[in-house]
Length: 259
Length: 283
Image (cartoon, rainbow over all chains, first blue to last red; front, side, top):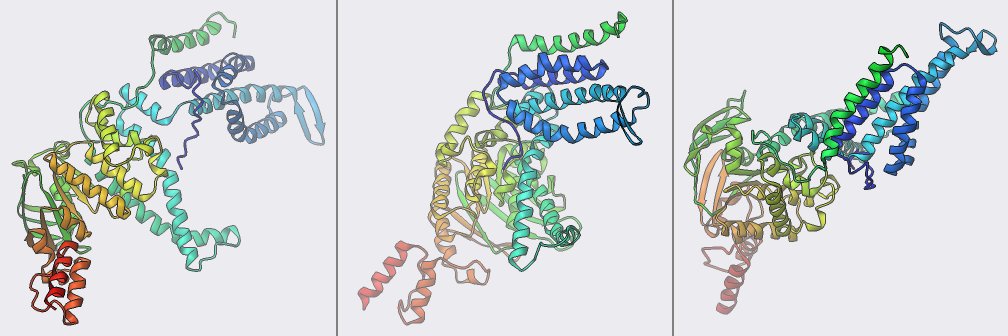
């Protein structure tokens, strides 16, 4: 019922501290977007993301989720940039008034590879990191527990509220409500269902707030965690080293005039 | 231990008080049952004892509320909840939504209070054994049935080991076996010196386990005393509380001319067997 996409494979990537993975993901994204050349994204993909996906044994699910997100974007990107890139001079294909240019496709390749890196790195993080562990790790590093709660509870409560909406719908259908017909008719039918759903949610919020306070959520004590978050001195060092190396990777080519 | 003196309360933006001049005196290590029809103000009273009113809900509260001699109004909410645990009526809403397994869910309050990990593990294990939650510990709280969620909600408060536990209809979604188990657990807690205030409709179980019963009706406490006396009170029907099935059978028997002259109607199986045996013997 939870909306988490976490896949428990127990790999070495899974066992990394969530903050280490988060820092790595952010470094990857910063590098590919700061260095505007396609082969940098390709290199990051080849030496970091694909090996990590293989080691994590989440490759199949990673491909499926990423393809669902990326395919429509990439298709639109290549079509639009291939056809309308302003600096396009080298025509590859011409069809009536439409001309696909080499420069347009090259530009789309650069943007597309960056998006591929962004999506693959993000999806790999959520596939290999349990949201509860991520929140525990971030809270242990000073993130507000309230902020952590907002993220965690959203992941779990949305499916719960979806189930409640389904229950209301079933109750209405049991009393003769028909939900067939055109999309417009379906929207009109759904409108009366929102009342009980939203009112119920307000009551729930008040109740849940009482329950949370009853369990010390407002306590000022330093929070502890039942589940230990894995960490090591190597990871602690790497969490500092990765941003510094990334900064160097970005600054050096510009400073030396290589880019 | 728990003392309410002349407590009246009206919710914000309302004129008519929900409770008027309510007084209670519940001793340490006692199970106190509070009976009342729907809308009698049971949930409001539960929140007052637990310190949520007026800290969270606001409104006009008069009179005094104290637990272990400490006025609840003088405490910060975080201090109040470390003295009085509150199990709310709807288990779905008692589940935090922030934890992904039953084990973590039970430990959530302990984490908030900064309890060390080894102690947390011990306490979670103990309470899971107490409520037979062992097989569910690694499941998501949202995959459980309503009854199982209710047990998790109860466990998540018991684990905090507050000296007082206030429970608002804690067995509403449990099957008979689960309900009996919860009442047995409450008796165990009483043995450990914990004071339990339970708002319930299950009269026979209250008779078996409670030390004292209070009746909440007409915005106030209208009767208080020994469970046998309270449950035999002829006014219970007027207060829309009903009676145990043994009392109902005895009344039906009297209408048919049996149990003539019986003044105290039975409220339990043992009492019913005794009065019918006496009546049969007399015939």
